[in-house]
Amino acid sequence: MKRTFLFSLLTAKLLSTALKVTKLSGGTSIIGKIVLKLCPDFLTHANKYIETKINVTGTNGKTTTSGLISHLLQNSGFSVINNALGANMIQGVVNAIAVQLNPLKYPSPINCIFQVMKDRYPYDYSVIESDEAFLEVIYDKFEADYLLVTNLFRDQLDRYGELATTKRFIQNGINKGINRKGEKPVLILNADDPLVASFEGGSKHIFYGVENVEYKEGIEPSESKTEEAFNCPCGRPLNYEKKFYAQQGHYYCECGYKRPEPKYKAYVTLYKDYSVLNVNYEYYEVPLVGLFNAYNALGAIALCRELGMDSKEIQKNLKTFKVAFGRSEVKYLNGKRTLIQLIKNPIGANEVLKTVDLNSNLLIIINDNYADGRDVSWLWDAEFEGLNNIKKEIVVSGSRANDMALRLKYAGVGVNNIKVIADIEKAVEYVGKSADNNITILPTYTALLKLNKMKSLKKG
Image (tube, rainbow, N blue to C red; front, side, top):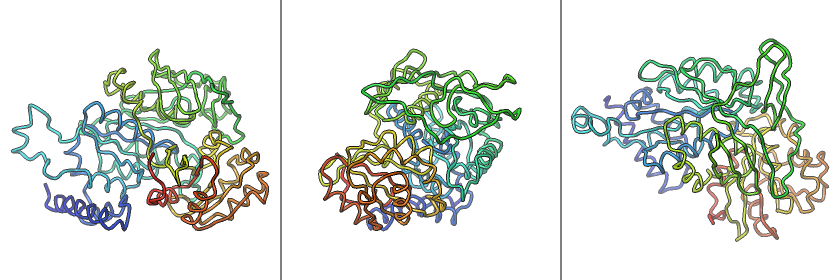
């Protein structure tokens, strides 16, 4: 082992401890930047610590899906490294691995002599959420055993451009990825998304998809006007037998191209606070709201079943899953139940907006930092018209609070019902004091990070 690698690991531990004590930073990427300065080949050296590497990418659902997989594996007794806070660019990935790796577990020749009959690798799995544009960079150094792709929607046009660019980023990563045996990664793909289902390469393609959706407890399916167009490879527009949301559904073309047959088929029943998935005649209760989270859970179930996990073990452990901060997480602000749901692009925002309690007190926080995407034109594609029946005041905050206020005005929300408080901490304080009921907060990514540091938001 190179001395620089060991030194970078020890440095990461010291910095992590210092940041926790001083609370100067959440430490999701800064340690990774320093580690890469000290040891540019850090990921290459880290490979020998971990037996099986799992990556999750796609536009929406990466953090929840990777969190579900990690939770299921850890609760089945496996050791797992996961970038749980969602920092998914190269620095964030290195940050998570460097902080969690134990340098004393390094598989030295002496250790291997004693461990060979037990377990050669100190860690069974890594479950790494990967930014679409950085997947190729990660796979340049890090081995690839499994890659799960959730969906592809327009997102951060200033970084990704249109969908063809995002798809190319991921395809380049698949082309680069290889495991220690020299094999391409196993691809776990959402069959209902024609963009995702069309990825090439990989040692195997395992598809998952939704067969039908049933709505309970008064929940009504809503048609989305925001859709992603995708033509068949032959050039014709795709037809749909069923469409669940955006471009996701059962598609086909006159030329014979169609949705691939999923190995893992789900019949989904949606309730207000959870969903039930009948996957290949086995029932899984998922403590998450919305169809988008049902897809996330289905992807996680498919991957874990491919790893050989028992369905009963998955069923038991799914019920205890706690979402990552801001992904349909419930906290309390001044004693009031507060649901926090990340929004960052039109399709994802539309699905979140469908779940918003119109009787709650609403705070929307829009930032335009690099990690959010500088281009906030997506606000005009998201269907905020669904909020025009809210009788209560809607508070808007963040660096683009005025843009959000203007969007709400044109969505039909009364001007007197919109209050602008650009400072996020002051906005949270105001809502906490003025709210007469439950609170819903819809933040972009960097706003979410700021919320995560606020002591006023407490766990239930």
